[in-house]
Image (cartoon, rainbow, N blue to C red; front, side):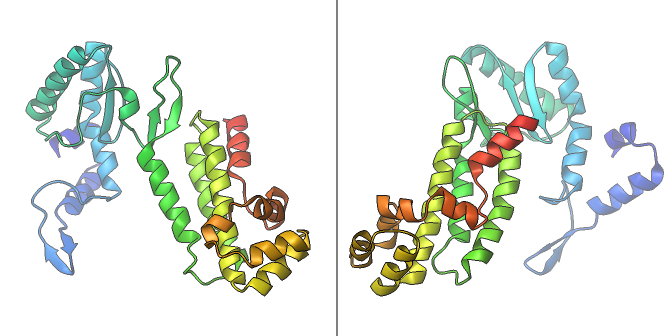
Length: 270
């Protein structure tokens, strides 16, 4: 609180912050007193992190380091592994001895930039480095899309597309800084395949598959083969015939947002 008081002069605000810190937490329906720290995920946590770690920023600037920090997440960039080890030890001493904070050693490491992540981003292991979506962030995206396009979720395709659009718009708005357009293209194709699988599950019976594919312009011969196929929905969703019947134009008419188009749009105005 003494460090917060350096930045915040209004005693009413200081009183509110102290009350918040002392309010306690609910753990599985049981009240527990707050002994130290800030409740995880609370809106006050990043604010206090910026106030307390402002001293760390100034120390890193004084030492001439290149770094980026967001709340309590920080990456420091040096030329060699030996320099990294030295800086790691020096920063750890400063954080623990001067700021009285504890460094999370499990999440801290000296490593190549492309093996680390910051706020969902990472780098490509190339001579001319590009920003990319970190593997964990991509896995989280795919898990969310699987949830929204799950065959077990009974809903109309219109509602499914609406829910998916809300998520895609926000996600692409955040990750528009990524330089790897090819990854966006592959994700776009994968999403459409997930939705084609939903249609096949919805049609279910061979006659329904045949009838709907013919309505979509597929030849009766191809429609009959797909309808009578014993392959699973996921395999069928990636056949050339399904790609033709439920292609880009079809999904555009359904109102589905294209990740690639969103990416190009956001990049053009960034």
